[in-house]
Image 1: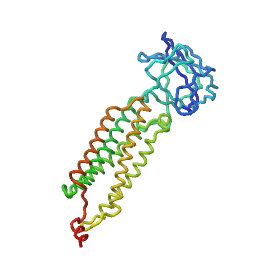
Image 2: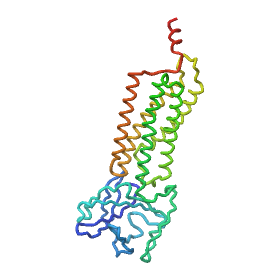
Image 3: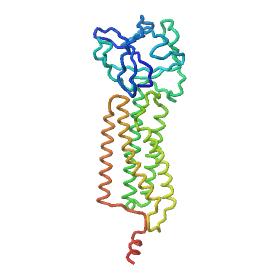
Image 4: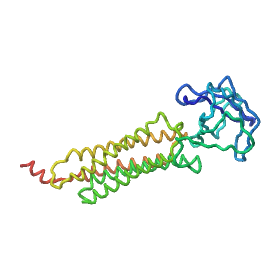
Length: 330
């Protein structure tokens, strides 16, 4: 990552010996860190007690003026680790490191690395980073669960609920009577509106530090666009309800705007859910297969339901169709 000034990478070679190397970041974007010929870091005897659960432990001494920048008491640090072994580990300058998962990483701030470590006890780290989550997770790996919950909520709110709500409003007016509107309102207000709000709040409360937020994914941007459209859509829905008259013989523009904005929002949501899957893979080096299968089933079912409604029932409007037809004949 280009914004990072340098890496310290520790791994074990074929003999099980801990190897530590200095690496430089790629010039732009994301990529394999580049071996630094200078190698300013120096492995020293372990300065802390190695815990029984630790797979690797090391202590390293770094010059204050290292990695082409100077360490300060307020320097910020990130860390990540993986379980897969490095390829060509016996040649440090050519070692290839597998991509770590999004769950196995974190950030440190307010930790002064210009001071020597004293004692053999645990180091207490206090963070004052304003970008930390509002609510702390009991386990760092739980952030992956937060993202999955966010995804399931959004698939429910922006795929399942819209298909059902649109189907009711488009095809079931004359079958359900006044209940078409009540069901449409409940599904769209609670399912889409409050469901979206829940998903957004949940991901915000447990937000990931900025370094782990994708700078290339359009998922957050599309989410913002859909949220703005949702507010407009609610306003149009209220106008359509308040301005409705049983005596009308034509469909007013605000009704049509409500229909088409709803369809556009659904299409954007489908695209954004796909972007969400790509974003998940970027963070965790894998796709949420169960969610993808569920999304595909909902999408196929929703499209099938709309085709069935159009072929067997046909669109129905709330207006005096018989009188309109008679006036046209006259």
